Length: 255
Ligand SMILES: C[S@@+](CC[C@H](N)C(=O)[O-])C[C@H]1O[C@@H](n2cnc3c(N)ncnc32)[C@H](O)[C@@H]1O
Image (cartoon, rainbow, N blue to C red; front, side, top):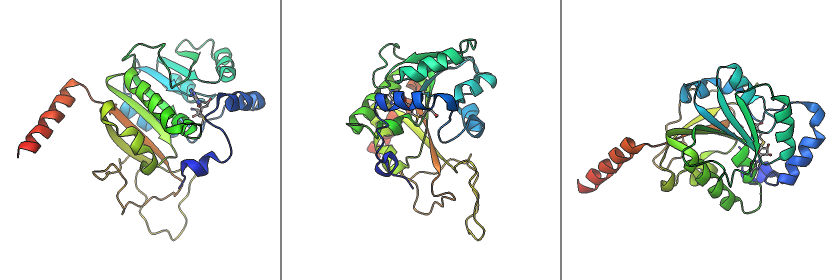
């Protein structure tokens, strides 16, 4: 299992200059998707973003194929942002004829360009992870997640794909101010094969993990791939859900 410290190594993934240099250096290598390709994530995306006309924000898009693959799958409106002007210029040139995609240089910690409640869904594949490798990581995480919460419409979905298990991600996500209902999935790395003799039954990755009341993975949970990826689906509760939650806790306090 990874921790933020072990995954950052000596790279400054939180630094725009690091990413600019990397995208210049790798310019000839073409697209690269961190962690998982759209084909592996598609069941989750289709389940939580069922409407093709949803307005989607892809934060820290890099040069991943994910957004282009989503357009091929029918999605009509995806805004892509990244802190690296180099990758945004490259992707803007590459995708100039794909009207469903927009590319903008922007820092996820300050997305004040967009009004409140602008998006139905926000997807993050490896971007909070990058911020966790930078200076003042907890502050950056709070700024980014505050912006994500602000930009989501009530009932909207923030989907984060990460190496970070709940011990290191839940403290950032589980803040009352966000009003998020969180569902967690654990998926093996692409190409992972169970070794012979492993005693666990392979679970379906589409089965959500039943979290403990603290929002952690239960101690008896068997992770087939120790380096699995995690998908956090955070739903911003709407008025009705919030008021029923409040009346439930009020009644629970009375009884
Ligand atoms: C690990 S890569 C993931 C790229 C892409 N999402 C993927 O799945 O392949 C992280 C991306 O986040 C971007 N990034 C890092 N810090 C950022 C910030 N503060 N605001 C916006 N993007 C940022 C980097 O430039 C990089 O493209």
